[in-house]
Amino acid sequence: MSSPTPEQLQTFLDIATEAALAAGAVLQTYYGNLESIEEKGRPGDLLTAADKAAEAVILEILHRHFPNHAILAEESGQLGEQENKYLWAIDPLDGTTNFAHQYPFFSASIGLLIDGIPQVGAIFDPFHNELFRAAKGLGATRNRRTIKVSQTTELSKSLLVTGFAYDRRQTNDNNYAEFCHLTHLTQGVRRSGSASLDLAHVACGRLDGYWERGLSPWDITAGIVLVEEAGGKVTAYNGSPLQIKSGRILATNGLIHNSLSTELMQVHPLSDWGKHLTTNV
Ligand code: IPD
Ligand code: CA
Ligand code: CA
Image (tube, rainbow, N blue to C red; front, side, top):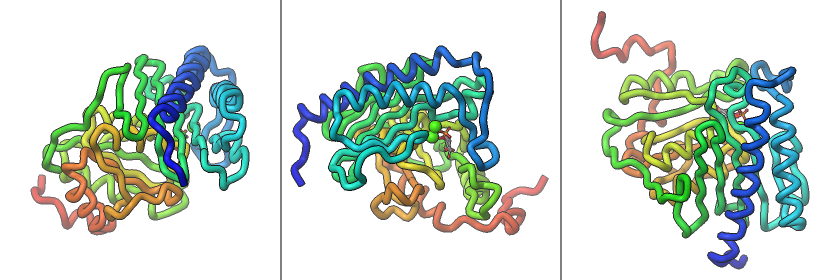
């Protein structure tokens, strides 16, 4: 397996950027102008004309530049053979629920796995005009300026973010207990509704850590590259190497990684919650 050269990675990043910006422009035209909103099956899992139109624009750009690469797109599924060395993982609209409610927190996320490893990522937040980019060994940027993860060393001083997958009503493994546990130990846990932006915000130091389950490769491939290239750490909950298909991710500034991993491994069931209060009111 040969590694891509920095020049190749730069080319991939530039095309990923072109696709993210083009998708973002499409999203802007639909924002506040949706005629109908469908549900994809699970309650709350929405699909809009914006998701489809933004995905079409991304696919056209990637097919034109890289006709031999495979693509895993949220709305179109797997395009091209699974064994391909190059697999683009794309989410045309990450934060569909926010978008549908005109809550301005969503993005287009374009990631590239090379030999199964996330190596290129471009995430564009069109509402705030923020473009996050990274490629393996080339660093991470926000609007073309280098970004770094935060310096927070203690969980008690950290601000975290997480999310709840669409299957949350069908499983007890729904992250509710983890959310309570970490809310109790930190300065706060946000639930923003866009996994790719959660990772981008860990990368630029606005947030100190992120965990979530039930994710797909298109939600996190680009963001993983951003966090790693900004000096952070990305693993499974228990600190072992990330298995992207597990859908479970822990991403931090590196400094709180072990503490957050330890806490995630010892979350009490929600039924025990009252026993862990330190003060009674
Ligand atoms: C969702 C968002 C959300 C996360 C969900 C994802 P979508 O993606 O990233 O933050 O909690 O698990 O499915 O449906 O808006 O593309
Ligand atoms: Ca998503
Ligand atoms: Ca999506």
